[in-house]
Image 1: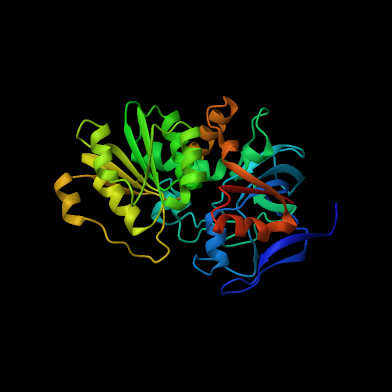
Image 2: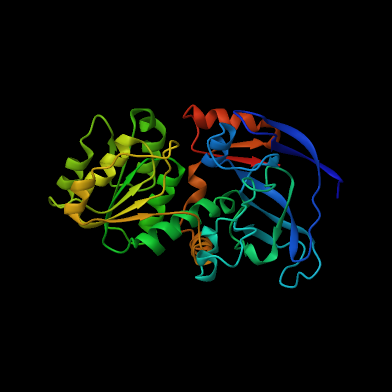
Amino acid sequence: MPNTMPAVVKTGRGVGLVELQEKPVPVPGPGEVLIRVRSVSVCGSDLHIYHDAHPYSPPMILGHEFSGEIAALGPGVASRSEGDRVVSETRTHTCGRCIPCITGFPQCCTEKRPPGIGRDGAYAPYVVMPEELLHSIPPSVGFDEACLAEPAAVVMHSLVERVGIGAGDSVLITGPGPIGLLSLMVARAAGAASVAVSGTRRSRSLKLAMARDLGADHTFVSGEDDVPSRMKEISGGQGADVAVECAGSTAAIFDCFRSVRRLGRIGVLAITGGGEATVPWDEMVFRAARLTFCFSSSWTAWERVLALLARKALPLESIITHRLPLENWLDGFEALEQGRAVKVIMHP
């Protein structure tokens, strides 16, 4: 095993300030494992960190959506072996004392330090993670699709475990980016009767087309289609049972809220980037819609995703548009920002 490794590092606070550096290969401590990273995905939050628009703790190696195999065990590790193929949850350094921690939601702990955000991550050949956060990759699942288990688990926890999408629901998803497309897959796997996806003109040729390929019953272009009216038309005048906001723009938020039926459910997975959003408040009060803000993932959501992957019931690999070596990380960032990519996978 080498002593050093190339890594993509956010070196300080400010826009940019990301570069490829040579870093020491980390050493696993008690209860930790060293993972040889085989695939790592570029997340939207990585782009936000690049633009200094997301909480982070520099200097640090980026990357939190990854898969790999165990290369070394730290002292006291008993449930894992070298060579095990694994993915990992991201809730490291939780306090164990706050209300979220003691009530079973440590992923919402304010002291959490996720890899690639609050500590060194996986834009490198090796990363160290706690044994307790690992999940086994099913034998039939490749490393590229396995590294998308993290965002898929966020969506699974949000839509199935919290919002409660289920059999027979009519669903609208605003925003056909990776989280929107994963929401489409999860809604389908949960038994939704119909799923519509809306996006911008810019997303028409790639992302909305991909949504159709993934089984969306309807796709709308915001600004050309009156999305709330179209949802009423296709739902017998009622509106969507569940509306899922995955865009973060004012226009998408209004379409999402105004498309849900009375007593319907709204799940919010996107951030605005500005911290505030205008919503049709009074209209939502009269509709008595249930609003759920969604964040992070649970242990059960990871297990659900991996079980569905083993059954080929979640086509995660279908949203991968680019595969790059780690040193070409900037090409991946640019492809995403220019709308030429949906999901970029890098191989350290």
